[in-house]
Length: 217
Image (cartoon, rainbow, N blue to C red; front, top):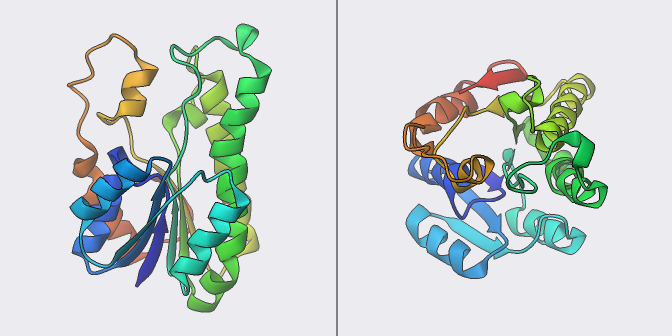
């Protein structure tokens, strides 16, 4: 079994990649920082190919797909929060919002389009990592939350259009990650669980393959 996991140098992406590697999966992983990604690949172990690059770059996306070959699973985990602290929509810089959508919506869709032929042939699966901010109206979360809401609906429609695949929009909950800390600058988030705590539920998801839909880990 072979998977592409984006944003795998730290946090949830690193935890999910490590969990799949321990189950014998072959992986192609990416992140923007070459040094961080190299460290992560050493931690992940197993059969892992690490390609540093920006998921917004079409050349990088093509390189991921070429390196992966026949793929059974795509995990669109890479994302950005946007400004920290997060501004209210009334003051949100629209040019920054475009970048949030580029990373969180357009790049995952573009990568999915490239992988779809092999996923169809192998009856594979797509995991789009989302958030409760996609479905709840939290003050200050209009940029990130609306981008994740767009990703969720794209996932929902993709599942309807590709009935031979599994398409899961996966909400891992609040985790103790750098991005979550950026969302709450200056606050103590040590009460949030570590990303590793959701790995068993994730492995169960991709192993048991329930119907497409929204999944809360």
